[in-house]
Amino acid sequence: MIIAAPDFSFERAGKIAINMGVDSIEIATRIFPNGEVLARIMDTSLVDGSDVLLFHPTYPETNYRLFLLFQSVEALKYYGAKKVMTVIPYLSYSRQDKRFLEGESLSLKLFLDILHNIGVDTLISFDVHNASALKKYAKMKVETLSLYNDIIRYVVESLIGDRKFILVAPDKGRLDTVKTLAKSFSCDYTYFIKERDRYTGEIVVKEADDIGKVETAIILDDEISSGGTMAKVAKRLKESGVDMIIAAAVHLLLVGNAVDRLYNAGISYIIGSNTVDNPYSTVEIEGKIASLFT
Image (cartoon, rainbow, N blue to C red; front, side, top):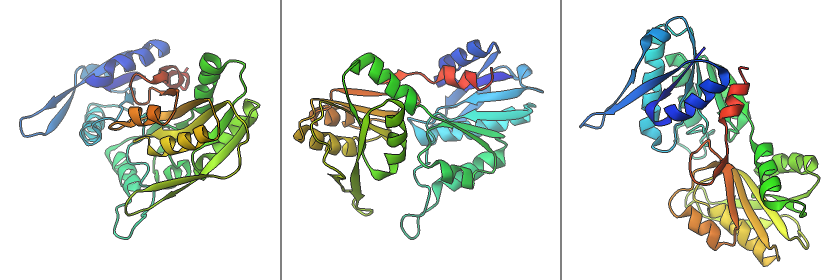
């Protein structure tokens, strides 16, 4: 097996290759004056007859990176790769897993169909928004890895210590995850009810239960994008007397002024993984990827 990655993530792919004891290949990327992009495998001699693990983050600059992904797979297949296993740490377009409004495209299915049609044999990702939808629409093998446990363990060991804490799901969709983790970490849990206007995007949150007197809370979600939901939940927790509030998520997109919004809402720390690389990505995924093959 060999590891391949575009130039913007080649250094991270090198860590996976070292852990696995295999070679790595860089895929150079080029942008033409008209905005078109081109991927080029820098050493095709290693590809022929090999299984290739393509490490290809698609966020940020999602649409640009997706077309480079498609080109990279096409080139790897053309130059003789036996299998192409693609690691997309944060699976772009996965949240549009149904037609919420009449006339909308089903983006997740379309994306998965494209990957299948260009020759991806296995798709590996982390904490996809709707794992059941992923398995429903995918025509290739899928591997979904979870980082929730790793993130909570990091928070406990690095920030909380022996203090008692409560796990908080920002909406009912994350309740099962929080409930399972609360059992593992021997802590209490609760959840909020989130209502979103499908046309305006406006979100309203309210507590499902009275959380009582709590000093420390970890709000856990699969991703933080604009930070709007987390901020609303944090404000309600602050009003309830919670002293330390930690915003934790696997995928930290942190769009626009999300960081300021979270801190202004009373959040003390922002913690996540490097499925999206930024200053708050403290839990690394490279070792977890390598462990799949060693």
